Length: 170
Image (cartoon, rainbow, N blue to C red; front, side):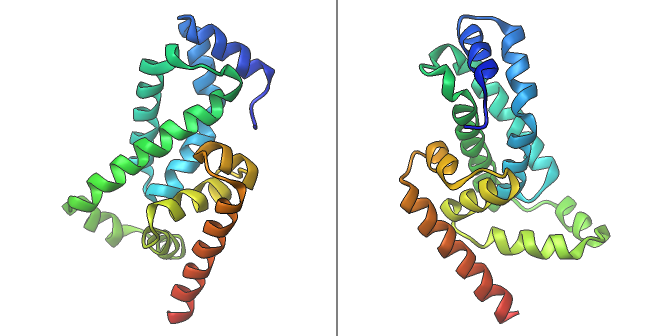
């Protein structure tokens, strides 16, 4: 995956209780985690919440990490679960702050794109997020999501078709 031997060594140490190693892992993967969260949630504050939640969950579970070589994959999977939990919770809530954000936002192109992505089912949003926001390859996405390469390709294709249809319908 994108990690290297250094991450694997840090993960092995962190699994044995070395907190400094865990902090180093977090520093190494934080950008990719934030990008993935932004792709799923389309909101910077919520994405930061998802990253924080993922770090908390990973810290609680690092001693159960069985394969240190897949620490980045493991961390990304935790992030996706945390982001999806937040997304589900947000669908049930409506805040007056959300209306204020829309009223004063000037990057309408990004906003429209994020709104289009929000219309996708969660399994398609995950693929789009990992591919285009976190720059994962299809093989890496398959590893993170624990699904076959062919499923990743078909979901990506389906997501792009749905987005094209939405854009064409205007």
